[in-house]
Length: 364
Image (cartoon, rainbow, N blue to C red; front, side, top):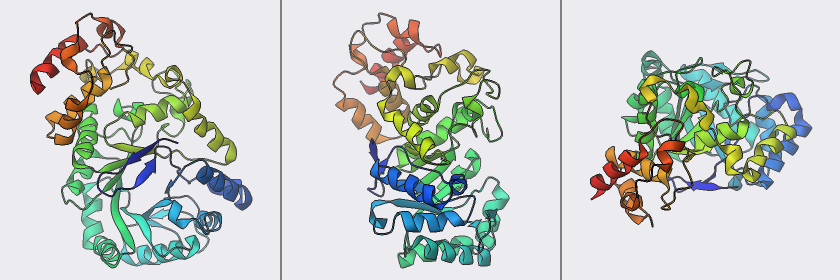
């Protein structure tokens, strides 16, 4: 397992976490075995906006005695009654009752990341505040039950407005090549707006956990893929991990077989994770934009072209830490010999030679 550190909270988070919506279908026994295998494999971050309330009991049994080894996202607005499936609300009383049930079933008295749940429209945010749900979440944080506050959304405009409050330490956002390229149900915001959101999170130390990395499975089948070609799960995971701000990808699993297939990500080669084939369908507004895929590697001069581009883009947003990281690189843009190897290989038609000169001049 690879880990990333949340700059605000200090949590060490495995880059592969789990979503749990489909886990109930496995049954309790396999569900428990799946979760225990996940923990043994280093998976320590779990999203609990799940489909069925029975999953909370499964988690409680699977991680009894190991609560301090896992991190939970629990959503204030994802509601479950006794034996009920998921429902969404911005009403205070059902949120209170649901959170209480979840804590009891999980066998825990604290929440690592208490989430403002699934707000995609400004009116949702207004209701969330007016109905007292936000105040309840803040009370829970003040009392120590909630350790950190998160937000789940599919809409950059709404996410940015809530981030403006300064309350949010973690953003759960839908990231995959389809949505970033304006293809699919949750392809909200332009590619540039979405990229700016990721860069903002990186610059401000807000972590991102990724939902829907496979676009509900559509990207995995050429018949349903909006690109007319399929990508693998491992390519989609790598794509998400390459976005600024991302700490962990949270694909859903239906049981042990799904988990074992996802864990194989850590045994794949760079070539097997390479998602640069999407460069053939790059939307016009994103043409010439480096997506940090490093398909241009190896550089004859030893430059990590993708990382240099990422630090430059972040530094221009005001991220002083990115500028510091750039200056710590052993090989920087001024080492570019303008051989054109990267330009010839870039599937996104980026003038990397020109970019290296631009970056050299920017950092001085």
